[in-house]
Length: 213
Image (tube, rainbow, N blue to C red; front, side, top):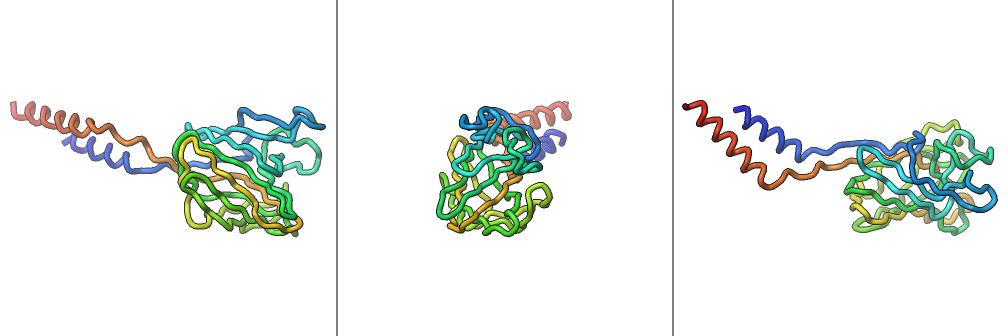
């Protein structure tokens, strides 16, 4: 009986998912690289990694900047906590790339659009993923806004390990500034080895034999 319960529990576990959040304001970053012009090593940030629940997410800027969320405009753009400022406009291409170290599903994004500026609309593309027309439901000022959480257009994004996924602002307003503060994601545990059910059945059989002897 105990072996049967163990087997059932393991099979149930194999089908579950685990949810977590990439918090871009928590200062838990690594492999940070910076622009080399003017500000030198203090900023702006070009790329960084963040590891959450054993998954490493590598971010690299295409346009705009990765800045501090609480002290916007003070010129000190190099130290965490960061927020991803996807800025620009007038047809300029802005955005970033994202690579995950294992298969994950991005469930939602958090952040806000700059108050009084044209709402940023961004697309996400990559292996098996096309999500167009994403927008923030919250607008506000850096340092005082309460970020909102929104689902991706078309549903959750299934990202494959090692593939490059591109987030690009596509509208051409004069000002298109948005701030990403985090992403919600889920992972699925590695499937049980094919031989495990056989082994569990054998254990159950041995237990039955011992009970009869």
